Length: 167
Image (cartoon, rainbow, N blue to C red; front, side, top):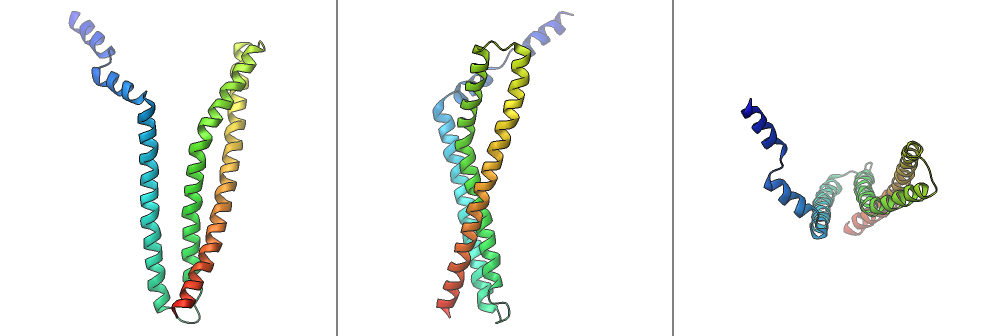
């Protein structure tokens, strides 16, 4: 019986590694380093993807016939547009999340100061969260699609011009 109580009390206490992890993650420097690391990984993978798409396009442009002249450039530009559209959405999301949290907290604090009961505050908080997330996602998708379209069009003309000058 005593062994069971001792085991229960020892399993409930967090270990020193847990406290160390909490201490590290509570530092602003840690989050900045994680932010920079994620962006470095995204930039590295997108750069490698860009190089592979351009090498694919170079191979395809050398073996294309007159009937399929613009198709490799179209495929490559759509892929590049999609990648840069996705990257712009990730970058905008990284900026939008902290701003959205500040807005959400501000609105809930103001509702609390105006005397809303706790139940009504919870209901209003859920509604506000749904509205804010929906608005942010709409804006992110719209901006990502615009960036993707602009990059695809510019990429197409750049690739066709490059292929035209190469011949």
